[in-house]
Image (cartoon, rainbow, N blue to C red; front, side, top):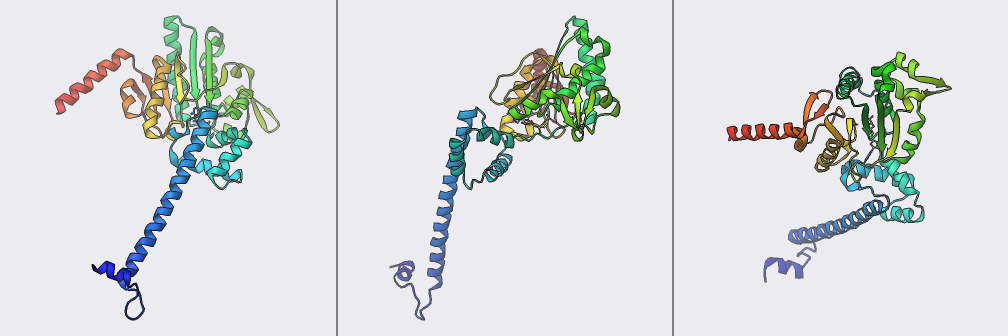
Length: 332
Ligand SMILES: C[S@@+](CC[C@H](N)C(=O)[O-])C[C@H]1O[C@@H](n2cnc3c(N)ncnc32)[C@H](O)[C@@H]1O
């Protein structure tokens, strides 16, 4: 009989106290039991969460597993608290009872912080350089069509800002072109409000008083965007994860959206946005976002600080690719 077995038979020592080995053993088994319990609970809640995410995907076709889990979990718990649910299971049952809760959850998941001319330097460059460049290239080619896309547009502040810049650049020549600015989002309630062009002063704090006066009318405490600008913009539902790319764009803004996705999913999104662009089309990310490494060769940098890029033509991509491999060959 080894010493452990002896102590098992005789848990108490001679003075009636537990031997130190036995205490350690008991603590250890108690510890293991608690740990096992915790793991089982976590596994159960993991399964419930997985079920919940699959349920949302099945019913709303939105794949939430592609979002960063820290943001996702915070938002899901926030919505669950508001709905007075203490577990995923509770919440799953609520969704069964009240299918409108899906939209409330999606609304809660989408962080719609935005404003007109957010990061003014980006918009200065768009107005002074990018949009005039697009217009002059179109003129040279005799092409009237200009297409721009604000992907993840929230209440349309970004799409409407672009439309104002087109009006500013073209002035009275605006009728010479067929301009369409598209704003897309997954939040249907925001998409319903966006076309009205009715905003409060807080989202207009970056706009110059000249543009505010020129393009908006004050109605009580709201500012109404004029019809000329609104007529250039349309809004529609589009999920950058599950929907196809929207082709023939000359300018794509996808700002402050990529950051919400897991690193490993960002490249697929950037690929979709690249596919949306005409050769030479311009692409803009948010100030805190960067091109996923696999996409660097597909764009040339226009302004790194302001995250403005230009789609390379496929020939240039190949050439750049060759250059890269030559550099690698020299370095090895
Ligand atoms: C922080 S806002 C950015 C708004 C604007 N682009 C800007 O930078 O001011 C992010 C927007 O992306 C939307 N969004 C989230 N997931 C999306 C997806 N899968 N496809 C399209 N839009 C999405 C959200 O609903 C939200 O309106």
